[in-house]
Each structure stands twice: as structure tokens, then as C-alpha cells.
Length: 301
Image (cartoon, rainbow, N blue to C red; front, side, top):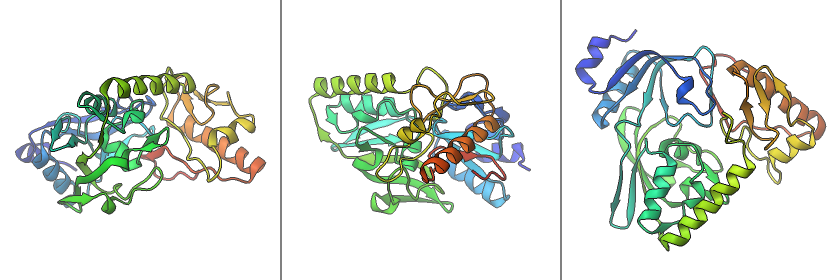
């Protein structure tokens, strides 16, 4: 158990007990966190991570809550939200330095306003910089890692600065999962502000037309198999519109499962099983989850 009085001696930020997490996720699904903490600086993060480790309490960092499905039982332990203390952006010596809690849309806008190009294709991704780095989120041929030079993290309780090579970026993944990302430094090429802004506008319009942005979802549910597209496979298997409880395979984009009617996490899990099993039976291809399951003790998908 956590002693709130003990934590308050070493932690300046906000602490909430039994915080409902659904409102912090783009899926609008999930139970409560035992402890929800909002650190205001690096010392706060270091102290809460160390306290949790010393007391055998698990901790999890939550960004914008996209690309995840939180169980109906919630998350045991400490959930750390970095948007309060790590929502900063700086422009230094042709580099952009971003706190992990900055939303991607804000990050892209800051880059464009400073006449930089190269990240405008990420503008519609509903993530924070930290979350986008962990998943190496990408769109339209670009990835978050493309312009990273270094990432400041807490790993094994110690503050470290990792080079891009240290981060192990690959398609929709990295080796940053067991770290707490604090900030990242990016180097971008210069660009015409008006041209880049127009490109961003066109890409967001294209995304909004192709994806079910009007309904709660967690983004693409499955990774694209090699030499194929998950959405095409799911569509070809006739699964668009398939429902389980309040969850449904989007009729707009087959690689999205949407929360169309107060879905539970279990509804989504069961629908994922239906999709995976059907695609495997009809094509022989095993779809791999892109959305991460959080707080589930035993789930086989």
C-alpha cells in the first residue's frame, strides 16, 4: 500500500485515489487507477518511480490514452500522467525540445510556426510525444523517430539520455516501453511555413475522411502484416460492421474498432478475437495487435 502522507513529503504534484481512467483514453473505456499522479518536474517523477519500486508497486505512464485498451478492472498501482509538468516546447540551436506530455498536434504546430518541415504528417495522431515515441507512431510514410536525436528517460530508476540508436526504433515499436520518457530532442529541415501548413491541413482532411474520428476508438487495432494491409484483410473477410456488445468494427475503416454504444473492455477483447480468428481461418494470416492491453491479468488473443 502507498502512504499518501509519505508521498506528499517527496512529491509536489497532484495525487488522486481511484481515478476513473475512461475519460483519459480515446476509447473512453477503462476502470480506475489505484493512484493517479501528476508530477510537476523531473524530481517528482524520479521520486514517485523510486517510491513505487521500493514498495513493490507497479507504475504505468499514461499519455493521451490512444493506442491502448484499459481493462474494466482498471490499473493496479500508480498511473503517472506527465501533461502537467512536461507540456513544454523549446527551440534551441536548430533543435526542437519537447516535453513528453506535449500533444502531437501542438508539437507539429510549434514546428510549423518555427518554419520546420518533416513532422506535418503526424498532426492527426491523437498521442503525446512520449506515447508516440514508445510506439514510433507514424502516418503517410513518416514516423515519430525520423527526426529524433536523443530522448531523456528514467530507466531502472536512473535519469539517462539515450541516442536515437539506443531507442531501438522499428515499425510501430521501440525499446522504450520500460522507461519513463521525460523529453525528446528533434532535428528537422527548414520549410516554407505556408506550404507545410497547407500540407498538414490536406493530410488531416484525408485522415478525417478515411478514419472514424467521430466515434471513440484507440486508432488502428492491428499492425499491417508484411506486404499487406490489415484493413484490406478485415474488409475482404466481410467483417466491417461486426459487433460484440457496444464494440463494432468500423464501417468506415476496417482496422478500427469503435466504441459505438458504451462498450466495455471485454466487448472489445471479444470482438478482437472474432476478427483475428476469422482472418486467420480465411487467409492464414495472424494479425498482430497494435493497440496495447493494459491492466488485464490473463488475456489470450
